[in-house]
Amino acid sequence: MRSPIGWIWRVALAVSAFGLALYAFRSGVVVSDRPDVLGAGILTHVYYSLGLFVLGGLDLGVPIDGPNGARTALWLAYFLAPLVTTGVLVESALRVLRPAWIQRRNLRDHIIVVGVGQLGELFLETLHAGTKSPHVLLVDTQQSERLLAKARHQYGAPYVCADIRNTSTLDILSLSRAKGVALLTGDDLINLEAAWAVLEAEPAMSVVAHIDDIRMKREMDRLMGDSEGQRIRAFNMHHMAAERLYDQHLAPRFEATSARDAVVLVGFGRFGQTMLEHLRREASDDLERVVIVDRAAKNAVAAFNMQTHESAFPVDVVDGDAEDPTVWDQLDTLLKDAAHPPVFIFGTDSDSLNLRLAMLLRKRSRSLEIFVRCFHESRFSAQLSKHYRFHVMALEKMMHEALEELQKEWFD
Image (cartoon, rainbow, N blue to C red; front, side):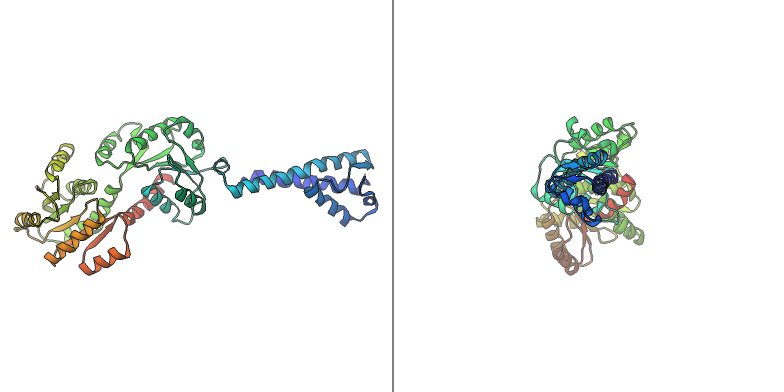
């Protein structure tokens, strides 16, 4: 980003050097190597004046005769013109090489993105999806050549390889001129420690922190009553995906069915737990029961219940591998009296496993409604979903939609 004031000074100096030289030549100054300049016309004087920016007067020689004031003006032009040219050349070279410090120097109203992993890249893509792309400064503890190249060429963003928690790092980020800070590393503790450090340095800063652990996210939600916690906008991508799945698909289905529904959550990791928590909060009156299927479902649900409020509907647990046929026999027994065919949500951490289970389940039943959690939505998964009639919930797409709305709230 170029400073308009800087360019005004450059133009003023260049005009001054040219004007001093032209004034000297027109006033009758004689130079040692071009004595004929005295009787030359104005075009020759303009030519020699412009030549000072290239040769600095080396081709003309020193002033030897003429009015004292005019000779002084020409000496000033001799020194000033090469300085202007050198300054432009040096800055142009720096802009071509694009060192991070020269890019950071004039940053204003920029967003500092800390952590450039999968979520960080998605966050950047969303920021630059609109018509007005903000200035961005990237920070990570590891300098990936691929990400560095992408940051330079696609986003025009400088890249700092440092630990955001260090005071020395905060000093070089131009925090006082920043619009906001997004903390998106894969370590929740780093994100939260950095959030408090940033607020200590700049109490009015807009700070966004991704919290991957939903238990930690719950604690942060409780901290929102604290003066520090209120200034930190904590979010979780699984929570955002669960909200959009419920609002776009499950809520309309629950409203359309006459009796209460049953939901089967296959996989009880971060996404499954977030989904159950959202169902408890939003759909207690619409659900007959929820069934959890996971290798360690009993222990995971017990730990989950200790941290959340009990729901109005029962939660049944099936311990086992979802690819084990006996697990499906247990599900058939639990759901044999359901008023409607249950909704299946495959939300394990393995995209390939979720797709495979959805295909197997469709072969068992043609009437079930099936949702499959994937991070990316590909042509292959879209073809499978069309053929086997299930819904693909692409976290990347849902996050993109949610972030577009939230980034306006966070940084505008």
